[in-house]
Image 1 (tube, rainbow, N blue to C red):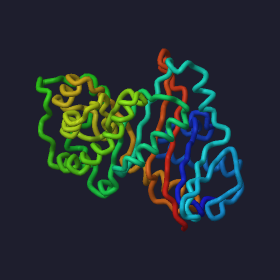
Image 2 (tube, one colour):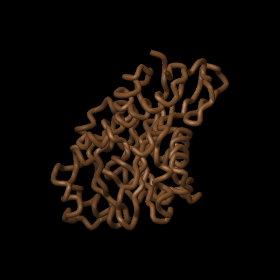
Image 3 (spheres, helix red, strand yellow):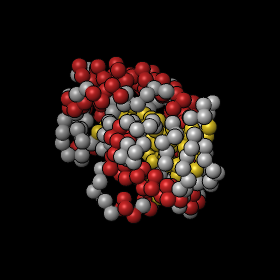
Length: 318
């Protein structure tokens, strides 16, 4: 179906209304994303059964093929034909909604980051987003001993400990990172800065209100905060390997109005999700270029109104 395309963007729409996903309440993040992509491809294929030939296809209101300079190159934008995102967005005044977006990206490409964000704005038909969290995981880090790197920074304990850590260090500066964390920071900080500058422009233009970062480590967070013009106000740490925050990190975040949150998103989400879905569907793809997860809450009730993913993949023939 998509073997002629070179690029594919997939907008899952509101996954909260997918019955098959609801039946699997215990699934993890990777399984949810993979299942969402699989169901989106299935619905799109059923609705639009026309084959793509040489990067062109007959017009359809549900998808679009964008040709490039080469006839063999095409971007296929896939959406679920019966999605209810716009209906859900219209049920409440925009002032009553809070939109949070987490961007998963493996390359420090400003073009890719802008493309990702613009796809989210298009999917939600909104003029601004309350917060964007950047999760930058260069591909080469996936081959390293990631578990050891994380365990040297945090101690396992109950998630409740996050809010009840006893602060014993009044300094706003962080203690020295472990060698593993220092090496990771050295590897990812230049790329984060490149992407952060793009996000700062969105803030300056009023299209994004707050910025956050995931899994950078205490020392890296301090360096990013000191360098950035638009300071991070959210820091996410992985729930699977940490819960007792070092006192100095807790103190720094409190002193600088940085909200500490936990998450359960795997670092290799882009590659694993691609292998589980696109590759299994006969589309040559080893990694998603980027993926954004959006969540829309109703402020006054704290209710999750809708949730979805927008992803892009570079595909090849198998």
